[in-house]
Length: 293
Image (tube, rainbow, N blue to C red; front, side):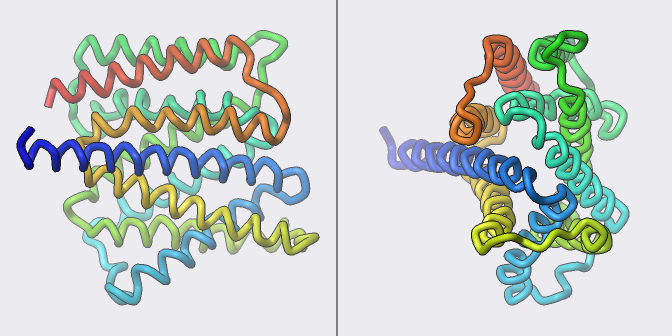
């Protein structure tokens, strides 16, 4: 094996490693949200998540680039994507109070399907029959997980569908600003606008933390969220997105583990079946996208 081949293989494994780290951090963050939601309003938890993320970004980005990093040639797109990310986070955090983490993770995997459907009207990208079939199969998998009309149906699961939709549109706006603004500019806007909006909301819902442990858990939300997103960005620098992205489904394993620690319950057979269908359809879209490009 040549030295260049060995280097390429090493970089690929690094990319996979960082993606797996990211999708291990996110379930831990969601588990903390579920625990804190028993005592504190979701508005306060969302504010802690965004403010903690902003503090980390300010510490890392501003000393290097200065306040001028907020300069952008696509202000509308930056503001829109930031509000969409906040909307996605808000819907997910409100839902995860009542929805088991494994089920929530399974439904959130709808994002690639929404991106595929929205790429046509928003980016002008065509959808070939194979990708469209994968989207339909993926949505069927979501129906298996949610089971609308059954006794186990949870209305809060629909909030996660909305969260996945907002995150899909956020990703499309992110594509539109990529190559025009610095990545650091996009990160700054995402953290700053979410914090500003929630800072107007949180005084009306504030509950003073009961213990130093709860304060530390709130601080951990920003660290875990920022660390997870950094690992995702880092992973994408080591390999092609279509190869690295499918490893985001590792989050399902983390969600099952964290959910079991919190509640002592495992997902039922329908959740496993639906998650398997969704993951298979998502990988099909990733492979099809790779061949198309």
